Length: 165
Image (tube, rainbow, N blue to C red; front, side, top):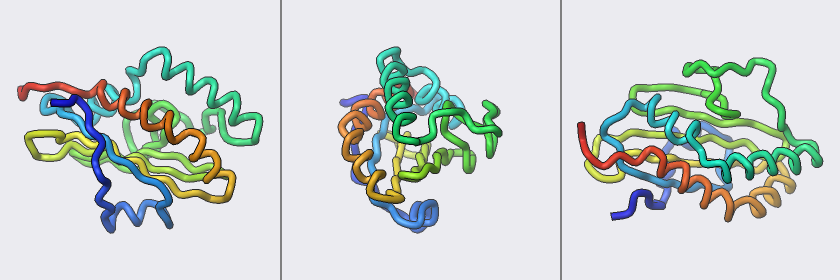
């Protein structure tokens, strides 16, 4: 059995309300019955390998050259609460089994929905939703899409825990 699998994204009314339009989406899932949604979020976003951190640094250097956001916002804080941040992702909502993160920029807006569903296999899902704000967003996403899939799959693997507690 794979530790992480890519799934078809079933767009719901709730997802469609997060962004005015969804131009790109994907879903990666893993198994974790041991940890809370906060712990799972931490495993995925705060335990990244050095090579992923290096790619984020390179992305920020290149993005800065074309006028995209690369600095932490003025309201940045690492509290796990609505309006806090996980890495550079703003927390939009937190429920018992779901966290919505994201960011808005000139070129695109995106949301990440992390869920912990009540099912035996592949209960943890990371869903990415992207809205292009202009042509630059579509071009940007076209360039990073292959890297996005590799990086997200690797990050989701950090949350994998096979046995139930």
